[in-house]
Image 1 (cartoon, rainbow, N blue to C red):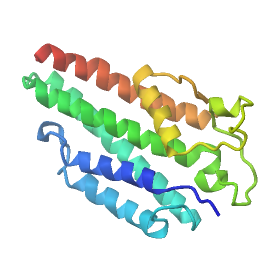
Image 2 (image 1 turned 45 degrees about the horizontal axis):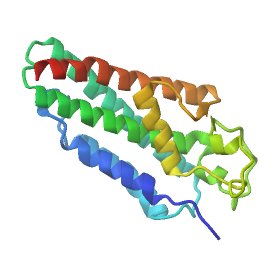
Image 3 (image 1 turned 60 degrees about the horizontal axis):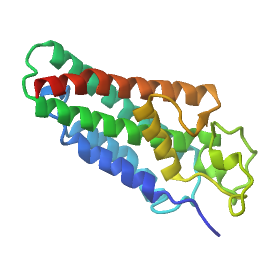
Image 4 (image 1 turned 180 degrees about the horizontal axis):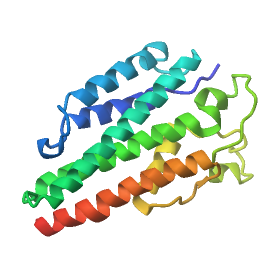
Length: 212
């Protein structure tokens, strides 16, 4: 029986937690080890229950996943706020610090929301899997593969990479591109993600270029 892979999402979150250790001290609102430690505590049971593929479905696991994502997004928003305060303080004279901080915030934004879209679309990856008998939920995202009738795409299901690409395009175009948000919850998530990306690129990165 074919199971949905979990390890790509876990690997992406681990990469983001490692990036938190590289956040410049000038914008660190709390010790840099706090976020990786808290994230690891929340990620550990998820990996323990489903290390490589999604086989064991427990309701509490989904709440742990959503709590982890909420913590990542909240911490990233705090870093962005601290960075904007740092810019307005007049002490921002090191352009490389600004570029590094903006890149870390932007990358965390993409990964966190990519996992979030993967987790909420149609009730989550377990609910989408054909091997699990669930009441079919409405799609939150409309992928182009779902709208065409081409050979080989009849039983296509989105994987984590597809949701990561949705998050990437939302963070670069500040709007949906080939995949459309259908439900209010995903529209809200995409709006928050685009706002964080816009502030990071338009305000912070532009100022960093001027400093450099």
